[in-house]
Length: 220
Length: 219
Image (cartoon, rainbow over all chains, first blue to last red; front, side):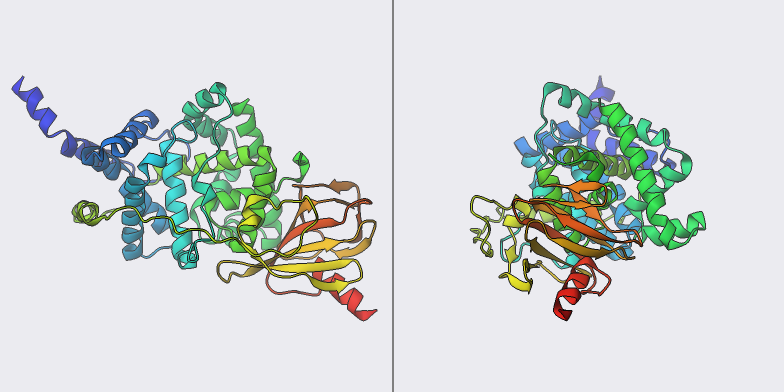
């Protein structure tokens, strides 16, 4: 019993330690393995606790899982290590501040955090938008799902996405990945495939159309 | 109402990954506002970004990061109050026509005469990018010379429509130029065709707009 109580009181550091050891094990990124750590439902419940009670324990768990990944994302898209650290910090603070705008029916927690990180990077690259208060940020307000069916699909989306990617030929899956994480995807793809830049566009279109077909098969 | 064959999947993907500059972002956001099917695709692409984010090998982090975050929470003031939004400036638009929301929120300059039956209005983007965006309105029934070229250019139809060889483009459809073929665009009869165009670089003679301008200027 004492052990259980102790485990209870150190729950947060424990969570972090577990998450971090898992993180260390994941040495290379691959499109084909399922993500290891935080489930969509767990992440969504952490965000809800932040929104409802400003629960710092919930934020710590979310931070432990997402901070190193958001920093990795910033590094992959070309930020310096110092900027990546700062952008990741700011992205996670946005998660804290905007927690009450998270709608688990509209998007998975991972999607919501990706969009926050992406938009933060765009803002920084462009030198902060919204200066005259003109531009709203519609991309952080996902469309409400159309039906109960859509909500069910949302819950399964992560595995479906992986299935869609897995169904692509390796070359096409790699092209898609480069789009998310390379600063100059077109020239990377040209180098990877050994084709001239002019040819890249049609290869990209092919990969994207194929992915669309896979996603829509899964979504129907 | 958009034609599924005319969804710019690659631009929608690049928007979802955050790679588009302001002009092309505006064009895609306008297209998304007009096309539920493309909104679904865009949501898929964002979800894919989330899934990929989770799979990234986590970066080494500064051990002080969490304490810094805690300090930031402590000093975090009240959320900033939204500044009242001023109304964006727009040129005169057809009676009963409302711009899609993404366009309604940006300043658009006055119409500028280009040629008989053709006018354009440039769009004030929040900051300078490599590309620019403008509205182009062409009178119904006109035939417009168009020349394929290398370099990004995309056109989103807002009102009216046109025929480009065998394909017809109506409201919400996006036409991309990627072929080295010279051909004509035929504007539909009825309403003038109002388009949003995003174009890489400054006006070049090979672009649709540039060719138009040059052709009419030479008359």
